[in-house]
Image (cartoon, rainbow over all chains, first blue to last red):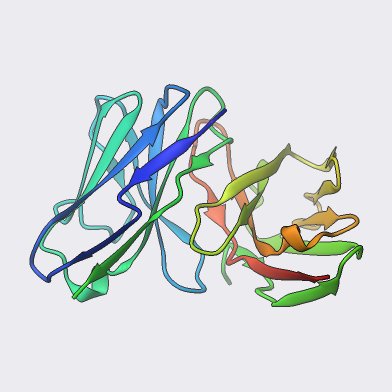
Length: 115
Length: 112
């Protein structure tokens, strides 16, 4: 149980374009989903927290107009990187929780490369 | 000082060894302590979580929390090559806060 999927697993895009990443909880309803970013040999940095049907809460320093998050249902959240630049290249990981807020289940991650 | 400090390693041990992984933290408000395992290019997998001080055992894994020292540990007994991964500690204040603060992770290699 507690499976979270992400799509795509890898994406390459040109600078200036937008990219959408999907995060789905497959076998449970996720009241809260989280989006993290991980640079090589660095820890996970929380970007934003989203609750179904509500606006996402962004961490300090994360541009909400650049990283658009939509949590349309209890099983789906999307992260859209708008006007991507090479410095946005990173490993993006989502997580989800249901009931117990301290048991976050992570997706496999999406590697974004902006050329 | 960072909120959570974790020795990045790398740590290399022979198969069958006991492995000790540790994290220290500065925020006394942390109440929940988690250990995640992350294989290369994959998302983290929750191994165990502990509330407040004490020990928790699950098979070959034992988690210990010493809040007085702000120090947590993960022990792996009879380590296997399949345990080779990066281990991340994470902590949360609880009280309605879902936010996790992660350590940088310790890269472990178990040599057959």
